[in-house]
Structures are given as C-alpha cells and as structure tokens.
Length: 85
Image (cartoon, rainbow, N blue to C red; front, top):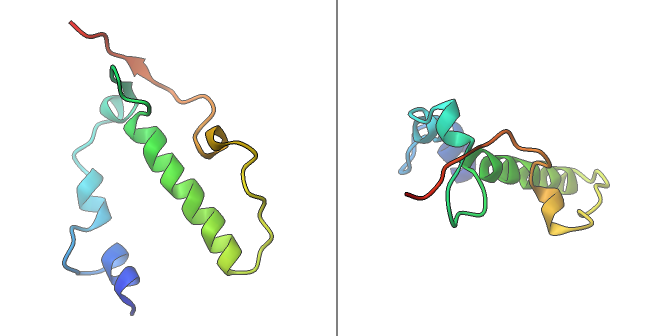
C-alpha cells in the first residue's frame, strides 16, 4: 500500500479523513460566512471534482478541462447566509 492510499484509508501520520469531518453538522457545512468565498460543502465538492477528473486523466479517460473556474464548484449549493453582527 502506498503512502497516499495509507493516508486516505488506513493508519498514517495524519488524521483519517473521516475523523476530520465527523464533527461537522449539515447546517455548518452549508453555511455561508461573511468574507468567505465558499462553504465547506462547496470546497469539499471542489476537491472531489478535481480528484475525479485527475483519476480519469491518469486512467486515460478523456475528460475535458472545465471551461471556466466556477465549473469546478457546485452550481446551486444549498446554503444558509449568516449576517455579521
């Protein structure tokens, strides 16, 4: 098992991804904050989007590069706006 695989699904020097996210509530991951460009959900979606594209490229599957940067984020995220006091 290589180091990347071990970091993602097994014991390693870093916290397991499932443990990093386990305390986050649905409300929190979809909440918009002032002066923060994306929600936690949108950032995680973005990471998964690029991982999938990269894995397709590695596997030789022709996958087009997104036409614009915003294509790498969810188009209509379910969010809750939080106003600054």
